[in-house]
Length: 306
Image (tube, rainbow, N blue to C red; front, side):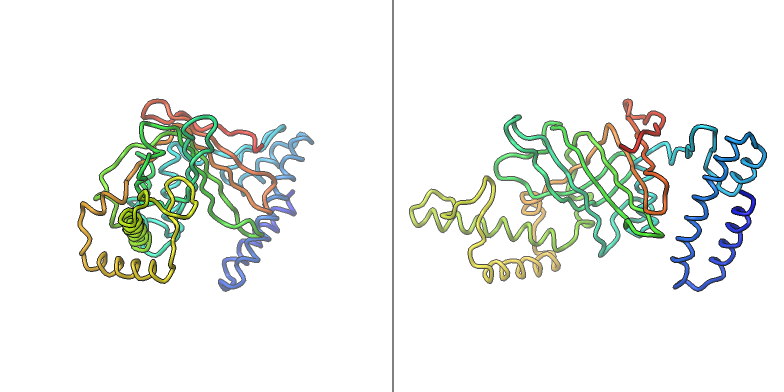
């Protein structure tokens, strides 16, 4: 264990001195050395050498080594603030949780189906803001029904990072419900392409419905499409509509009334959240769960990875 600890210290100093291009390899070596240290410390406990185990554990702050297990400190008391701060560290948002410009920041959001016979409504959602109240986002307003209305149960999945040597990946999961928000609060944080294509899609759907109605049709599309969907028809024409809409959006030519008729703003308010983190250099996945009791999060629970 002492040999492993001295080697660990040498690795740290070498990684600091090395250029940035070599630090990823050094980071991988440090993680492996840390794993060896944990194993050595656990073995020292089994051999009734508590002082040696304690000395080794000093090199790994945040790790509590016992005879039976290795447990980490809770990553935080508020999972939403933890997710916001981690996202800020990745330059995905600012200190207030608002989306950074030009980044891909999205989650998968599923809402319960209308009945048990209907599949959940699953979408990829652009995140506009994260704060301690919840996760703010926008979606196209459905012409028939909204899957997030009336406190319909929802769940989300968010992953970030890479599963490869020297790095880790995080998976966030949550359940809760959505509350409607004022679109004006976050519309500036929604990517322009998302706003323009949403408005353009609704404009073209109305155009096609009007053309079908004037031709004596039922007002819908002639092609067979699923509920609340409209066939594109001519892609070139749709691209023209999108380009015109982008120009209007950038010049402020789209009214607030039209935006509000096309886009809805929501806040996902989780009642339960969990984070699972790991990578190829770690011994096991690290998984924590938070449960909300009223407006307060209960103490985080360290749960089994599977």
